[in-house]
Length: 257
Image: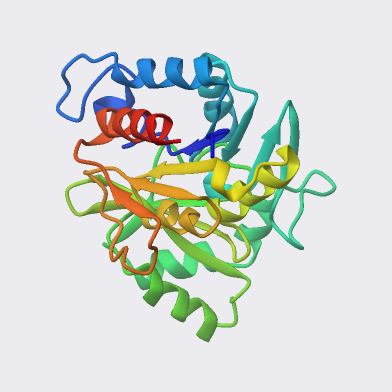
């Protein structure tokens, strides 16, 4: 079946070293990611960015690659042709109060910083200007942290590991429990009328891996630290890393569809 949509992570996937579209994982100049985007355009395939970044950042990246849909803050919200939908359950922006503000009021961000003092900190300056997620950096076990939240009566929130950004350093997002990249991808697929078999995903994190539940084919780039993939028979690991791995996933998918 022909591919109609690609859902891709940005950092460590579509983008190479230094978050550049034109760099490999090692920092060498490359046009492969751009050529993969061109191949999608020629084939009439929509490309949707799914990222942990803020709305303004993802919007600009989507505009630069000529796409009108994007997913920001690890699936907290979806924009289709300029219209935003927050996928945050009962927590919704209201009366000038953002979902980010409502999460802060629970005291959970402070709880996590106390519990993991020296192992977790706000991901400055990228924690600023957020509409939903509280974003941290460090090295903790997200499952362990979520067990702590449940024990403390905060099961309505969860900590998401959004991948490695440096040696022994990952980014983490505190979001409503219902938020996920997979749920946002599924919402976009319904809105566009795409069948599962018509969609592929590309990513580098555990949160990206879960997108395999809703797409026909999922690629994890070579640099990914996504854990065990055996539970997902539709997951493949590329031979190349970052932008070159993205190119590999796209060209292989288009050739085999």
